[in-house]
Image 1 (tube, rainbow, N blue to C red):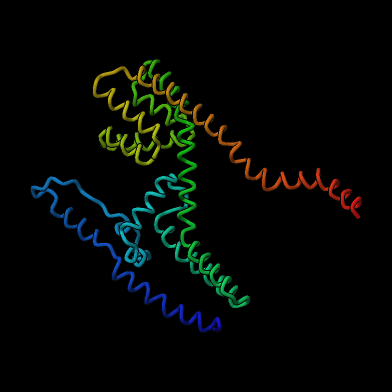
Image 2 (cartoon, rainbow, N blue to C red):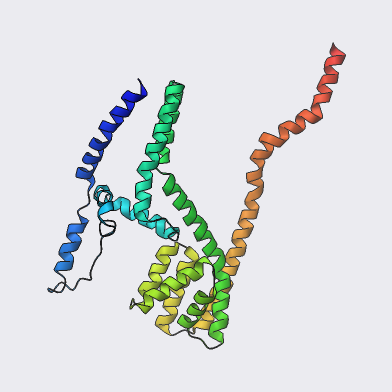
Amino acid sequence: MSPMLLAASAALALPLGLAVYALTATSRRPLAVAARNLSRGLGTGAAPQFGSLESRGNGRTAFLRTVTPEREARRVRRLLQGAGHPAGWTMTRVLAAKPLLALGVGLVALLVVEVRPGFLTALVAIAVTAGSYWVPDAVLKGRGDERQAQLTRELPDVLDEMTIAVEAGLGFEAAMAWVANHGTGVLAEEFRRTLADVNVGRPRREAYDALVVRAKSDDLRRFVAAINQADSYGIAMADVLRVQAAEMRVKRRQRAEEKAMKVPVKVSFPLMLCILPALLIVVLGPAFMNLGDVLG
C-alpha cells in the first residue's frame, strides 16, 4: 500500500473517530455543575462546585474541552498536581500534545514501514506509535515521583527548623510561614500554597488535608495527623514537632540503609552479565589456547 493511500485513509478515519469519540465520551459534568450552582441557596446549602477542563480555556480550546472526558481531565490534573505544575505544562497543552505526538510518531513510523516493509517492523511501529501517546503522562509521573522523594528527604530538616522557631516563641502557622518564606525546596513551596489557602478563608484542616493530597507522602500524612490531633487535644506544638522530627530522621536513615542493602542485589546481574564473562576470557583464555597447542 502506497503512502499516499495510507495518508488518505488516515485523513478520512481520524475525523470520523474523533466525532464518534466526542459523541460517546463527552462528559455531562458541566451541565450538572451549572444546575447545582444555580440551585445553590434555595435550601440545599451546597457549596459551589467547579468543572475541570470544561470550565477553562477559550474558544480556541473548545474542541479539546468537548472531546476530553472528565475522567481523563481528572487524571491529567492529578499528574500535574503531583509534578508541582511545571512551568509551561498546562492541562490543555498536555491533552493536546498526546494525540499530536502520536500522530507525528505515527507518520514517521509509516515512512519507516514503507522503506523497510515487514511484519516485525510494522509491529514495532504500531507499538512505538501507541506508546508515544503516553509519553507526556510518563514524564509527569516521573517528575511527580522525583518531587515526592525530594519532599520526603526535606521533611526532617524542615521540622527541625519549625521546632526551633516554635521554641523561640512563634506559633505553628508563623513557624510554617517562616519556613515557607525562607525555604527554597519543594516542601517550602507546598507550605506557601497551604498558607495561601488559609489566608483566603479555607479552614486549616481542609488546607492541611489538601497538602497531604498534593504531596502524596506517608511521612507528611502522619505529620499532619499528629498536628491535627495536637490541635484537638491542646498538646504543645513544640513537643509534637520535636518528636515528629526525630521520627522522620530515623525513617530517613532506615530508608538509606534499605537502599544500601539493595545495592549488592542490583549489581549482581550486571556483574554476571558484563564483567564476569570478560574476566573469564582474560583468565582462562590463555590456558585454553595453550591446551589447544598441546593437544595439537
